[in-house]
Length: 197
Length: 249
Image (tube, rainbow over all chains, first blue to last red; front, side, top):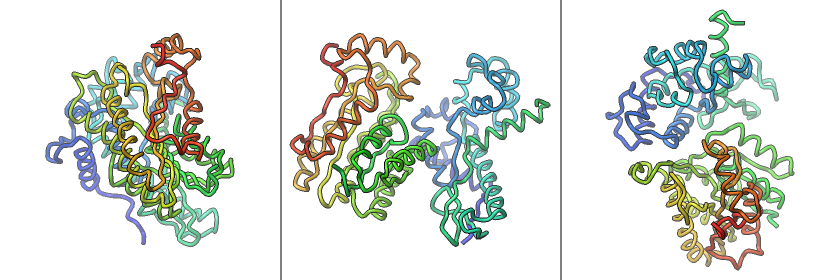
C-alpha cells in the first residue's frame, strides 16, 4: 500500500505538540507553539533528543543532528557563517531565511552559536518535519523514476514502519534523506541565491 | 567464547558502546544488535565494522527512556533471533545541573533513561535468555564520589549498581549473571565536549597511578570478561575500572 508521505501543517503540528508535551511532562494544551522550549518549559538537551527521536519515529524521517552551518562551511569555506563562535552577517542572513518562524530581530547583532538552542520552538520542529517530509517525497519520486538498483523495479514505496523506502519486488531498502544533508543543501542554495558563488 | 550467542549493546553507535560491541565481535557471536538513538550514520559504521569481523550485525534505533521503544527493540530481537545471550546496558543521557537546580523532571527523566531502562531492559533480556546469559550495566565514579553537576546521573548510576545486585540474586536461578563496570574518566568524543575537558583530563592524569585517562577499550575488555564463562563466579559486583584513580584521590 502506498504510504502518504506528505502531511498537512495541522497534522504535523498536532504530532509535534504531543511529542513535546509527553517529553516535558505537560499537557498538550499547555504548549505554546512559538514559545522557546528551553526558556518557557526548561527543556534540556536530553528532552530535545527524546522529542527528536519521537518525531523521527512518528514521521519516519531523519532529523538533522549536527551543526548545519558548520556542515555547510565544510563545503563552502570555513568562517563564512561562524567566526569564533559568533554568527557572521551571512550566517544571520541564512538563519533569517532558514528559520522564518523566529522573530527576525533575534538574528541581528551579536548572536552566539551556542545560544541558538534557546530558539527551538514547536514551530521549529514543525517546519523541520515539513521540510524533511517534502524531501522524502522528492526522493521517493526520484527513486521510482530511476528504479530499484537491485532488480530494476519501479514499485518502490515508503515503509510504514521505518525511515526507509522498500522495493516491493525484491525488498531492497533505501534510507530516507538525511536531515543534515538536506539542510546543508538548503543553506548552500540560500547562499547561492544571495549572490555568493 | 560467544560462538552461537546473540548480543545486544545499547548506545553502541559511538564511544564506549561501540568499543564494547567491537570487542565482543572478536568473540565471534552469532549476531550483535547495535542499539542506538539518533546517530544513524555512526550506527551504520559500527555495524559495518562488526561485519568486517565476519559477525552479522543489525542496528536498532531505540530511545531506552521511552518504554514503548524499549519493548519494541526486544520484540525485534525476539522476532529476528528468538533469543538473547548477552545484554550490555551502555546507553546513557542525563541532565547536568547543580543540586539546587535539579528539577523534578530532570531527576525523573535521568532516572528513566538510565536506571529504569537498565531494570526494564534486564527484565526483557531475561525473557529471551532461555539458556542463561550475561547482563552488564555501565556505571561511573560519579555514583560513589562527588562530581560537579553530576547529581542526577550519579544517583542513576548508583541505582544501576544496586539494581544489578538484586537482579544478580533473583536471576541466578535462570543462570543469568549480572554485573556492573564502573569507569573513571574515559576519553570519548562526548567527554571531549565538556567545556573544561583538558583541565579535567590533566587533573585526572595527575592523580592516576597509570598516568593517563581511560580509553573505551579499557572498559570493553572488562565487559567482555564479565560476559565470559570465566566470570560466572562474579555475581552482582561493581568492578571499578579507573587505572587506580579512586584509590589515591
